[in-house]
Amino acid sequence: MTRILTSAFLSLFLFLYTGNSFGQDVILKLKPTVNTPQARDYTFRQVVDSRDQKSIGQVYDPQRNKHSASFGGNLPQEALQLYNARISSTKNPSYRILVKVYKLDLKEIYHPDLKAYKGDIQLSLGFFLYGEKETIHLVDFNSKVQYGRPSTQMHFVETSLQKLFESSWEYFDSWLSTQYLTNRALVKKVRLNIIDPIRESSKDTVFYDPKRPLTWADFTETPNPRSSYNATIFSSISIEGNAKIENGEIVQTISVKVYMLPEQSWVKDANDYANNHEQRHFDLTRIAADRMISRLKNVELEPFLFEAILNDIYLDAYREMNRLQELYDSQTRNGINSEKQADWNQIIRKALAGDMESFDKILD
Image 1 (spheres, rainbow, N blue to C red):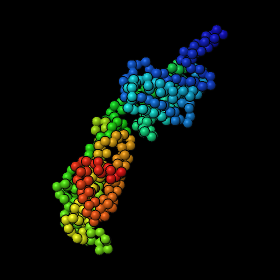
Image 2 (cartoon, rainbow, N blue to C red):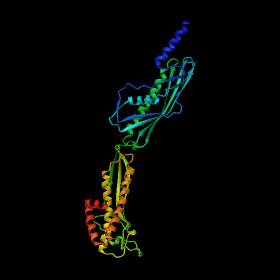
Image 3 (cartoon, rainbow, N blue to C red):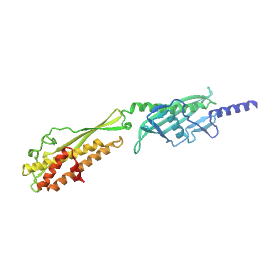
């Protein structure tokens, strides 16, 4: 009788010591480490338990009875505390991290010869970056740990779980240290490299060159006999580019082209006055491109949205170019009104030199 009471008391003492109760469920805990936190430019914002089944498996008590093991619904909070205890974040961290727990499974088997239990724990989770509108998947962690324990030593289970989650942080921290300079999802800045050189023209494409004014030889399409216009020029702007990552920032190269197409441009009466009118159409295309470049140089770009913003700037410039061409032809009556033509000649010359005051008044 005395031995039975002593054994029961010893078992109770061990269960209380490990912080677990062998009632219906065994409640496990993760504990923040007491190690010196590492200075980092990121913080863990949230941990989400994505598992359908919140029990992680079953463990045995000293009488070899099975009990369901879980975190009692506290896994997200405890894991978040564990992760953030490992780091000392900067005041305004560059990266806010979400962790999703996909899988956490525990299996134990009894070894009669050893009178002990062997356990196997598998952990699978993902690290995500909070973006402007959505989370961005960064990397997954998949690992497992095995342990052996005497029947009365439950703390081996919690210790193994603790090691798994700490290993997941070490894995992510190491991954981030090798990725932040080259991984697009982690870049902090966008830098534009705008290329706008004087390009060599060909018979198919005449690129804008202030030292090479248009000649009638650049208008090679057969005139439209039914058109009331004396001449027509097809001029436009385009951009091309590519992006690469250098030292943690996106370097976006934008190549600007201002051109006219001879095979879509024609003239009936090739005189100097008409040539000047068509040259001014080409100049207006150049001005629209200059104004676009000015916007590009002054825009603030975020890594997650910069492509859409650049596209909007280009489309705005294209629409502005068309509006300018229409205003010019409307006010000069396609060059017939010589006074208005002279006014536009002056406005265009100033705009090409960088003085946009008169130009802005016209657009307003």
